[in-house]
Every structure is written in structure tokens, then in C-alpha cells.
Image (cartoon, rainbow, N blue to C red):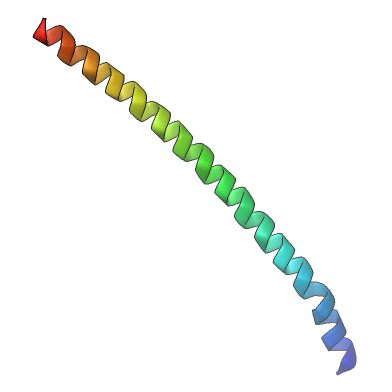
Amino acid sequence: MDTSASVLGMILPILIIVFYFLIAVLGIYCLILFIKLAHRGIKALDIYIAEKNRRNL
């Protein structure tokens, strides 16, 4: 009984660290995707504004 508790005590912190690392990587990946999406949105908005200004002139 004592050996299984010590094995769990050794493995559990490693699993928690791996889990937190995966969450951090996923967060960074989502941030990069959001920045790319915002950049495309800004480009689309610039094209839209330029098109509306050309029509008004």
C-alpha cells in the first residue's frame, strides 16, 4: 500500500506540470491565431473604408 502511494506521489506532480505546459502552449497558439485574425480584420476594414471613400468621390 505504501509503494503505490509513493508512486502516485511521484507521478501526479509530473502529470500536473505536463498539463499546465500543454495549457500554456494552447494559450499561446490561440493568441497567435487571434492576432492573425485581427490582422486580417484590419486589412478587410481598410479595404472597405478605401472602397467607400472612392465611391463617395
